[in-house]
Length: 145
Image (tube, rainbow, N blue to C red):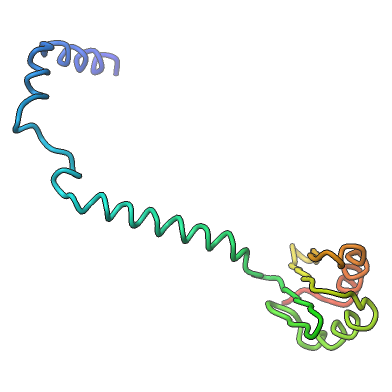
């Protein structure tokens, strides 16, 4: 391996500096791709911008529920998305409306890791009731099969 490197360096050193200077100044020196194809720079800039926008949208949108669920609670409605058991929706709506009865808007995100339910409550007014909501859901929900 070192013999190959030595021979390569020896070949490079055999070129005189004046030869390399003449080669760089020659008119027939190979051009860069951007000189040969002027539209290529615009195309690469377009794809880089598109990738940046897609990355921003991906971060703003957030993670999909996957094996989990999302309960969105506002003043007028409670909506369920993801893998939430339909037979439990009425009980959870009753619990959130009448037992918890928090003002404002909040979200409850949940997902199963193995057979353990992980619950996170997001919202200004919901923080004090997070443990109560988590306990209710852990006692009443079973992981999907």
